[in-house]
Each structure stands twice: as structure tokens, then as C-alpha cells.
Length: 208
Image 1 (tube, rainbow, N blue to C red):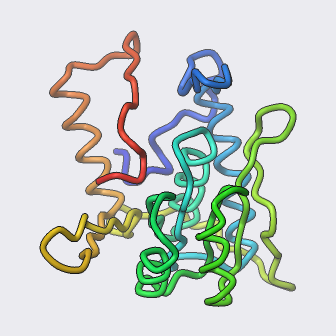
Image 2 (image 1 turned 120 degrees about the vertical axis):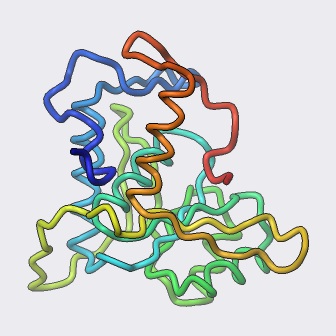
């Protein structure tokens, strides 16, 4: 039985398409996507990030968001997506409250860069190389560290979201791997999705 996000993709499936980014024409099979995610997850673990550590993700929609989100969760850390359009003060408040161990940003997200540098938090820049492969720049290895190979478990927190804060300050909502798997199963069952279907993402990926 599938117990975490690390088990939902087939690493051997190189024929079926998992994701297409229309703006760039980039596509990835399930096997290619798993390979990209696992490569970055290992990089994150070698930086000393692991179970229970928060990693803020301040990225627009794109392959970079998808791969880094799953890479953080595969490493047993907690992905905390944030709106790239937030102000410096808003980002500072959210990232500081998290106690984030690292911030993943796009090169042009100056407010997030500024906040991370002010708080002395490592900044990892997500970008695509010439082959359309997601890279994380700025990740430093911890000397002598041998990262654990343990996979995330159903009860591990995978995602931490802030509410919109319309009634007061934004409130944090933790969701486990089990929560997200149950939601995915419910969604696919409700809409009777099969392997022949494709869905279109129209909402910002950082959104609740």
C-alpha cells in the first residue's frame, strides 16, 4: 500500500508522460520525473536537511516548483510554499515563524533573497539547465555527513501551508504524507481519472 509521496510515481515508467509545461514545451515521463526528484532529494539530504526541517519554497508555477516540492518531501523535510508576490515584510514574517532551514527561490525573486540573507538562511536557486533539467544552486554539502536512506512515512509532515489571514495573522496548517495521499485519491476517484486523462493546473501551486 502506498504510504508516502515517495511511492506514488513509478521509477521504471519511461513511456507515460507525467507532466507537460506548455510555456516551455518541456515534458517528463514518470521515470524521468522520479530521477529528477531523487537527485535533488539526495542533494538536500547531503546538506543536512531531514525529517521535520522546514524548507520555504518561493517559486512561480513551473517544473522547478514541482520537482523541488517533491524533492523536499522525499528527503523527509517539510515543504512550505509561499507566494512569490509577497512583500519583504510578509515573507520575513512567514519564513521567520517557520524557522526555515533553507529557502528555495527563483533568480528574480529579490524580496525572498533579501529576507533569507537578512535571516542568515541558506538560499538555493532553482533553475533549468540547457536540457530543461531542474538544478539547485547554492546547496552545500555537510562534511562527513552520510544522509539516511529512510523513506518518508505516512505520518511525516510533508506540507505546511499558511492560510490567507483574512481574519488575523495567517495560520499554519501542517499536512502529512497520508493527508496528501488521501486527498489525491479522493480527487481522482471523484473525477474518475484514469491513465488516459490529463488535468490542467490553473491555480498557483503555492495556494491552499
